[in-house]
Length: 165
Image (cartoon, rainbow, N blue to C red; front, top):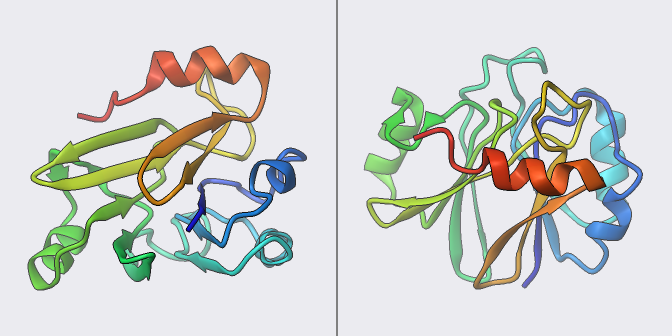
């Protein structure tokens, strides 16, 4: 099973998304979608599981769960960081464990295992902020990877990875 992971599109569907997400079985969007037109574009590629973010007329603390290929995902927008979980995430994990927590909000790429749970943020696929990367994630059933959406973001992913400790 191949999963595309995206966040913080802020109303923009990057022109490389269709190619990067070609042949995925599902897409996870972890908030700040920026409009139904983004979800419609993603749904033309694969089924989408998403949460709304703080820029989507929500507070960014919604939690959605999904299981793909036996891997249990918890999806939220604001974490805020793996070492300091928001109450909404901590309570949900206390009720039911997850294998992976996918989050957004920071626009920073993250891939870290804490307490046996992988925390993954694909970074932002929307408008560029500061020197942060524009990227998405892919999960092939075993491995998570960040995919830079432009040449500048290749170095930015490496520079900015796991700064949310």
